[in-house]
Image 1 (cartoon, rainbow, N blue to C red):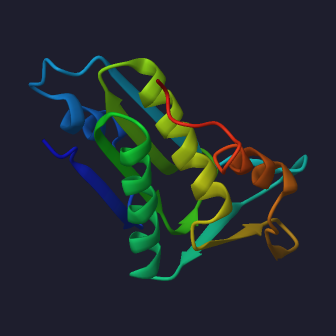
Image 2 (cartoon, one colour; image 1 turned 30 degrees about the horizontal axis):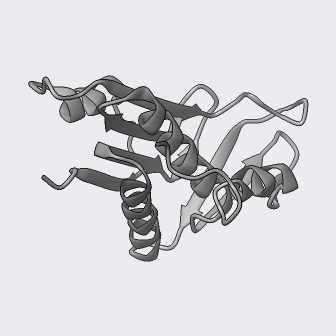
Length: 161
């Protein structure tokens, strides 16, 4: 059976619990569900922010995320994956992204969720603007995010055994 996967980009908020239930509802073969929800913080580098604005390249973003979901499904024995990423203006306290992975065992579900989040932080075609009281600035890539994603390349962490 092919593991079902969902990739959605949307402006509106999502319900993480309802999305998790879609992956596990009525199933007795699932041993682990890992969910990660990224939430907009109220500060950036210690300074208060009013909002984040996320932009993406429609069509390309979904395809690229879908490609990495498929890669995760080849690396780990997954039984389902959901990735939902919001775009537009997002205020502090609002959800930004959901990654949910389902497997028979926790190791695979955790590793796949980490892999997907590291990818989203470094390579997904999104652009983030931080809105503060006096200015708006585009966020540059961070070396720490690149280093985290690097563990999944050759010589880095591989699929769970």
